[in-house]
Length: 180
Image (cartoon, rainbow, N blue to C red):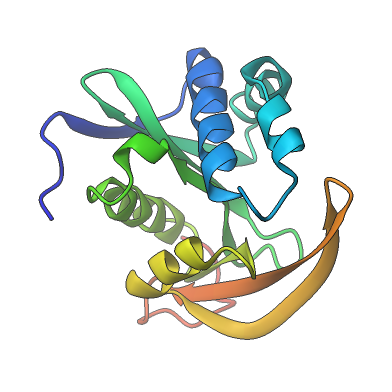
């Protein structure tokens, strides 16, 4: 599928907090329908998510990429080091507005995320809800592999399980080697 013309993937700026929060809310409301209570999803607001994005966009320990079409934010990725193993990169979040799903934008955003992470890390991980079948299929399609690790958690008062995916970003570098 051809990537839409006008797509730009760029570094996030503090002024992106509200558009990113909007993408996150809309994405969660569609992606997690049936996973989390509808009444909780329906109450999500941009205003509620805004403080998180204002903090992330001013945090030197993370990087945010924004996917936009004709100047409108349609997706984002939040990247950083894995807290459990700082020699490994991590995709902390990656979401698209549901209106642009299945148009090649997610793949382009993922490739840009991998490229950004590969500047510092030889491998990266991400965690995804085990019940997020759409997300898991996407990650597998773009070369991420479930490594068999899972962890229980409570999200919004519900028991959930996340599974870990992993990808070698630069097969020529051994994991644990010094950062570039």
